[in-house]
Length: 474
Image 1 (tube, rainbow, N blue to C red):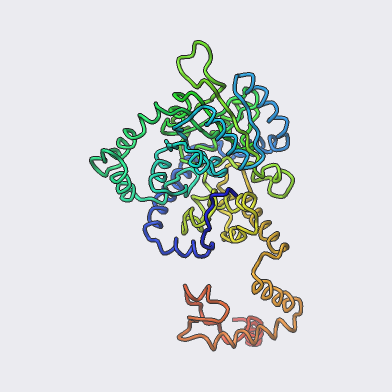
Image 2: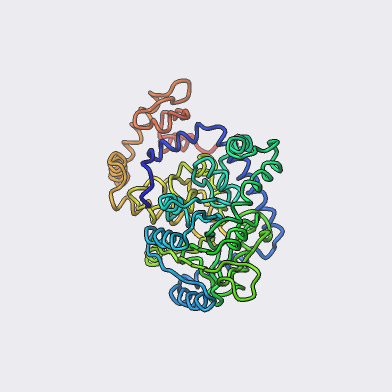
């Protein structure tokens, strides 16, 4: 966890605030519903999807099993192309490397294309502390930079903002303000604001969707072209990427791109797919004079050795969020970490520690939709269940929950005691019922505060069964 993380309200308070925000729910429903429909159409139009999915899983599993080999190959080939490769063990080292490169370049202004890895390592705060102006160039990132917010989705960072809210931001921050509030006019206004900054930046910072081992190239995909404008005009290009982004070859990158784009946006390919292979060479018309690639571990090698290694297959498509019933109710900020949704509930305990994020593995109904739509077959519910088990073993769950489940376990192991408890329980519950419903119940306020429970019949299941059995078949 980076040092600028301010104290946050507890998870349940963040959830309550999100559930009470009707505008947030409207914004999330619009975007996730559209994304879900587009993905379904893209998969239906691609009969080879399941075969491609199996291949994508196999590629990632092969890379994970041979990660050191491919990272060394990438370093050799990237260096041969003129790039400088840096290794960062954690977020603090990654911030220090990027900041040092910017200061050595005497950078006053830095442009940045969308990169969740940059958010993970706390790069925005590090640049601000170094006195360097940071310009977010992705349209959605531009929106949330104006709002002073973190991304709420890994593909659509401003998903939580409605068009009307964006119009208010642009009218307050753009000079001149947009002439109208329709999307096309607001996009033109953003272009006017960003164009001069693209051309005057000293350093451009990008992420990487893939790192190609056999060429040493980094691959970025966008639909706006901002990554190209971030990486080409400045004198220095810095790439920050997690070590799990490695693939053996360009062919493997395209195999995964077929899955990534369909799962993320419902398209066949993004508008811009660019492979960056070293700095400008003699005779090149443009390009950076220096290219630096910062390879970040930050807990990833720990994942290699434990039960969460399958999470390293993630290609950051965001499909699990778009189909998650919990995410679609509370949005991304309620999760409190860099990565929201199902994949974030697995990754955040790795990054921030389980004690600080023990609620996240429980933010799941276990309906399995995330695993169904994952393009590389990550069993997210299984991994969340593993975190729950670890939380229990480390005694991180509330004492009242541990006591309640302990009592339940003792009763459930003794049939006679279980039957007695059931008979007493159904009769006690009937005492709380009014008009066929239970509106409040001691120790169950988390349920009854939001919905009434049906009043049970006055007999247990076994009592009803025996009574019916005596009557004979119907």
